[in-house]
Structures are given as structure tokens and as C-alpha cells.
Image 1 (cartoon, rainbow, N blue to C red):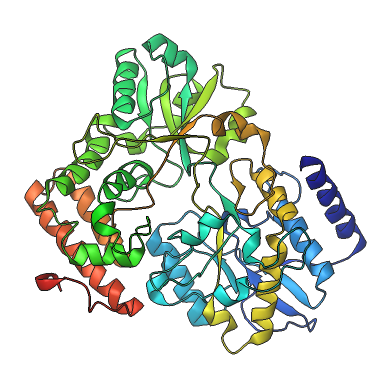
Image 2 (tube, rainbow, N blue to C red):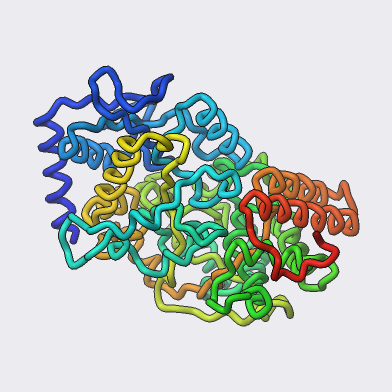
Length: 503
């Protein structure tokens, strides 16, 4: 597969030299054709958007080229289409910033036809085009696949990042996390000094490890500070550790259709039926577990500490980071100690009576989508040529050899389609035991507006500005209000729901 990938890359580079096609930045108008007469397909690949320069420079030292060459090859095969990269997006911004950007682009007629917004994150705004019918199109790029749908890993069609609350597929997965979106990078020397013989497999073992590290004079755990410098409810520790642990324990109650998946509609129903209310001890335990991370595990003043320098100096025992950091960590010439990466551990029965015992698989178990792309309604409604161009691009992009190019360059992801290669830099990581994460999540406000309200209330609680009772009351109200707005916006049928006074 790697040899095939190299051949494809060489072909793309030869094609690049043979044709003179200019890829421009986002222009201040949006139309089906530009001055060249070609369809101008505006594409937002978020962190996978190719860098402006093909070679590293002082101003742009981190280049990403694979999607540039893929786009070049696509335009050679589809000479009626010109790719226009959306470069004004606040990549890494908070929900509210991202929502505002999309809202502005839609209002101004400049929204990308193909865009990244975490799959279904803004589904209640009705921005996404349902894609089910197009996935049944015949596959025209070879292999043993009959339809476009057949190219992808089958379990992804059950993901809440791909399927909306109405059961419609609204996102096309391109890459998946290598078992987890983030990992914990650890200092092997620090582990030896602290007497930690193996990496933590549960949240309790993780806490114990951080305490041992602190007792040995190290920083127990350093949070990821590249973008997240505030106390937020829906931070990575919530998404990867706390939320699936507690929500998974409620699957017998919340999985109303019995298919083993907590859909976003089931999540909203459960909220309105009182399942997530703080009247339950398990809800308070979930909130308290998350609060403990900020009040006890992180050092006071953590948001203003330069953990990167401390990590390089060997002062940090465990560091939270995205798996995409593995290549740069491997090439780091300053760090003088060996490091490893372990999977985010789930909360298990050794620390809470309200969760289930964690089971493990050898290697990643049905990893969640990473890069998943929507077709935005506002860009293609009434414009069949634009829709056709968007579909052609997505089909071209999701060829196994193209996804392999992306995975090998990114190094911290796997392919969402079958028969893809990946970087050998993550081989050690994906060879370890992975928790079998329940296909369930605890609600975090349901919409970006109510999610932001919950974040602010949680921060006040962590900082001691409001009492436990005040936070619980506020959290219940925010979750209920968010669920009501979500249900109304999605037009869900609630006639069979036992929502009683919650409505």
C-alpha cells in the first residue's frame, strides 16, 4: 500500500508539472462560474487545507501538501472545475466562533460547498445536504466496490458525527482517529523515577499515576494549551473520558430502539424524560468527576503555564496532546528523554459505582471520524452544477489511494475508507490495548448557544463562584432548554416520548 501511495503521489506531482492551474484563496464573491468559465468549487478542509507554500518557510514552517496534489489531480481529470480554498475560517476556534463564521459566509453567499464542521455539530441549523441517495451511486474508481457507500468502513454509518437526529447521512468521513482523537504523551524517564510500571488503563490508575509523578517532583499532567486555555465543560477530558463512561452506563435506558447506539434524538429524548437530571446521583457524580480534573489534577494557574518548555526540559510526566503531534515529537532534537503515548482511559468501576467495567480490544475499536465533510445547502440549492462538482470532488477525494496520501502525511490518523495506508509513526500507538468506548455521549447543551452557556456555568462552578446547588440547577435548565430547541429545530416527533412536565 505504501508503494502504491508513493506512485500516486509521483503521478500527482507529474500532473502538477504538466498543467498550469492556479489555486486561489477565498474570493469575496460566490458563483457557479468564475472569469475562466469554470465552476468555482469552494472547499474547506479545516486543518487539512493545503498550506499556501509547498515548501517550509520562516512564516509558514508547517506545510501540508497532500490535499494540494489531490486537488491538482482532480482538476486535471475535471477541467470544468476550479478548486477555491476557503482560507478565512478560524480553524481551532470555539463553537461560537465557528458558527459565526459559517453564518457570515452563508449570509454573504461565500459559504464553501464542501466544508468541515465536525460532521453534525450544527445540524439543528439545517445547513447540511442529506447525502444518502448519492452514496448509492455506482463506484467508478475500481476495486471490488459496487457503490460509493461500499468504499467506507461500515460502522461509520452509525456514527452520530455522520448521521443526524433524523437518521440522514449528512457528512462524508475521510479519516478517523487512530483509536482516539487525543492521547497522553508521557515521559518514560519520569515514569521510571516515580515507580509507575505500566501506563494507566482506567481513570483511577491515571489519577494515581499523576499523584506519583507529583510526589517525584514532576508535573503530574499538563493540559493541551494550543487553543484551550479556559475551563470548559466540553473539553477533551469530557469528550474522551468522562462522557462516554457515564452515558454508556445508561445505554439500557437510553437506547430506545435497541440498536446499541445512542443517537442524538435518543439523547434529546432522554434529557427531556429526566434521565440526565441532577436528581440522580450518577449525574452529580459525572459532573464532580469532570470538576475534579480542573480542581485537583491540574496545577493552580495552569492556563498561564508554559507546559511546552517544561515538557522539553523533562519536568512534565504526562502531557495531553492530539495524535497529530507524533511526527513533530519524533523529530524533536531538544527533548532528551524517551516518550510514549497511551490512550485516554475511561472511568471504570475502580473509581465510580455509576459506570460499567471497561472492556478492551487489541488495537483501535471502531475509531470515531476525524475529517468528515458536509455539502452545504446554501452553496448548492438551485445550483445543480455546483452540487455535481461537490459530489465529484468528494468521490475523488475518498479513493483509497488519496486517503492514504492524507493519512501518511498527517501521520496521526487512519483512513475512513477501506484499503488505506497509514504512517508507521503510529504503529506503536495502535498496537496497544484500547478501551471499547460505548457509542454514547452525555449531552453538553445540544446546540452551540446552550453549550456555551453550560461552559460558562461550569467555569463559575470550578472557580468557586457558584455553589454545587446553583450549578446543578443551572445545568439542568440549560440541558432542558437546549434539548427543546434542538428538538424543535430538527422537527422531531415527540408523541411517543414520556416527557411529562419537562416539556
